[in-house]
Image 1 (cartoon, rainbow, N blue to C red):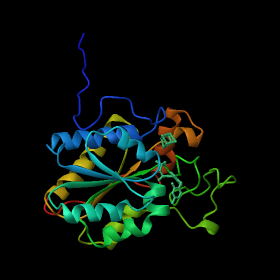
Image 2: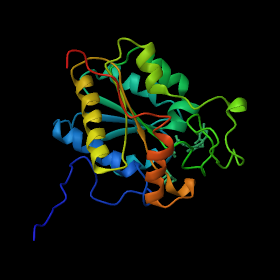
Image 3: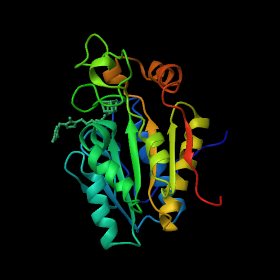
Image 4: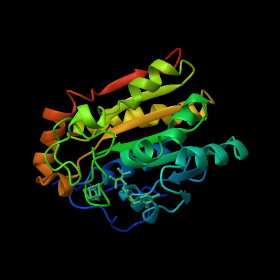
Length: 249
Ligand SMILES: Cc1ncc(C[n+]2csc(CCOP(=O)(O)OP(=O)(O)O)c2C)c(N)n1
Ligand code: SF4
């Protein structure tokens, strides 16, 4: 019988992370760290980490990181990168952090075409604080602050940041959206993350990857049903794919 040994990723601490069972954060954290390892960047990385369940990433790392004020990681990452242009700088944020609270910082870093990589975990709510409505909550979705379902005529419509950034910022290097619902999707997402990191390493400019991620606890679903919700309800509104590929690749 073949024994599959889990590969140790040096910049990831050898201990369990604090995410709920079935959460997508853990998968994405692992993918980012595998990419850094494969790109030989374990000792050349600084994370700018947002506030939320995303903050749990910091506890699982054995590499440099800064926990930022809520929503401000785009500005913090900009500062870190400008004084360390050869160090990889990655912001890791939830949709509530990057969009609802930090849209100005997120937007302006893209607008200036900062040579940073932004990873946004879109679970269509504010996960850590109990599943409140965020800018990505789908129309009709029930959350703890939209108990009858989101009414977009009152609140506005769910934001599609990757599409907006790809269409508005022609110099941006790489922009994509992936998800974690199957091994195929996970492998595809890993390629997206690696492309984004390589674009930054080659000084090509701004790169961002949004990840559709399950939050079974706040969605009131089992981990499997949460994955199914992404496929059936979320992807039709938030399509998967590359919105801006690297030039000449
Ligand atoms: C200025 C400020 N406002 C509100 C909060 C409370 N708060 C902490 S985490 C969080 C939600 C974060 O949600 P999201 O960014 O979507 O990440 P998730 O937890 O879903 O991964 C909020 C509102 C805070 N810490 N600081
Ligand atoms: S509350 Fe949601 S986003 Fe936060 S760790 Fe649990 S499942 Fe993940």
